[in-house]
Amino acid sequence: MTPGRVGRGAWGGGFGPTARRYPDPVADDAKQTRDDFSDAVNMTPKELGDWLETDESKAVGQKSGGSGSAPAQGPAASVRAVGGGGVLLLTENDLAHMSKVTGYVKWHLAQEPMSEAIEDSTWRYSLMNWGHDPLKKQ
Image (tube, rainbow, N blue to C red; front, top):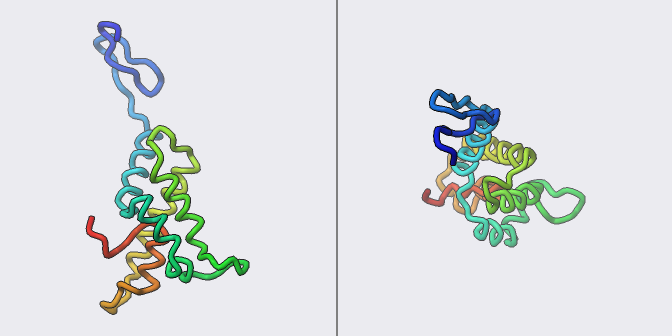
């Protein structure tokens, strides 16, 4: 690093002792999306992969085209891929998908059934298809 260089701002500047670092709203939004996703998805990629192989996972949700898989399984497979990737490898599509997953998990958590028997409920299974197990301790 060159002496006197403070750092690079969003526009590549940042030289000299009076350099200012300008906020980068795109990077801030991406970080917020990653943080929200990390809070919403509490299953590891392995846990999610194992779950998606179960009959219970395949049984929840509406079937499309007689494929026998719930629609959430496609997004959940993407959750596994995104969740296992590094921060630098995320694309705009990844960030959009992460935002969708986060929104779905938050919305679905608000729909928690009044009964206390949620362990084997379709509500829990649907959330798990999106990478969130409501019974798992954070």
